Image (cartoon, rainbow, N blue to C red; front, top):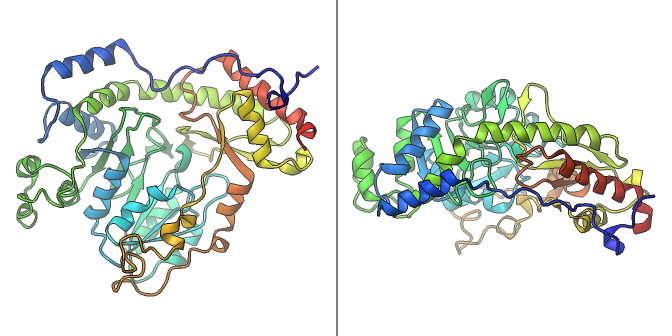
Length: 422
């Protein structure tokens, strides 16, 4: 007989502790202590652990240039400046991300233009991109959501046809591949996050990669110290900005974060293999539980499993709402969450974008016409929010079969007693 639901006073299904993430090894501790004893707690040029991390990303991705930054968002800021986003320019992107992931476009008074998503992958639907391109479109910002690569075979020809810059946000997708090619190797610039929850944790930080020297040098103007600019800039038109530190923003990565990320990067393939093994096992079992469809994985891709999106079929469980189902899972000890509101619902867009004052950036003198951010334009994104949830934050970089079975027990328990929650 199934035990009573925890949300109704029963015992939790999850009794085992999930292994901690990020992983902390003795090697990491020794490396950080060694860096502290080196006395260089701040690095203004390209040297030490900063240089080592940048070189490691270059080698892993086959990129000519890499730039360490204070966060993944800072890497996106540098990318937007590098590709030349100016007031009134439009950038096509995905709506099914938090608003702060899109704000680097706004920082340069550009305007995000959202395109609806593929319901299964949460990534931008390439079939809808072309109709959103205008004379003001400057770039496409692709977000590989949840660790599932976007459909690059369909997106790349559009970028080439309209001479648009292509920026990849790989915060969720380090280690993911599309038809054998790594995410972050398709566009003009790729941006990665090394924040603690990401696949290569370093605490806080980001990395930008590119094969174009001009883009690399422009990116450096967005947040690097004059000492590094003096060291690395070669373009005379950019060197004149050295004395001000480019834009004057401090987006440098802390060298201790670089040390941690370097040690994590050495294990990323091992951790991804464990995530994928766990994901296959979970998907096989979840597919037999009423009300659930496990994480979709398109053919010829390798998922990075930043998290596990699950389709919830409300009718199969008597009409129990998604929110109540997720709440019952949480009570059992499952790290399940409903998805965040999509970016187009953020006040900075729905509120006419007046965050900088005087109507800027969305309504400034450089903008032409209004961009419609009505939810009605994004039916698939809205459907995702209504009918899907995610669990397994940071994935499952282990394969503890007993713990995974406890998760599955929790799902079966809640699904089988859905009627008790109606």
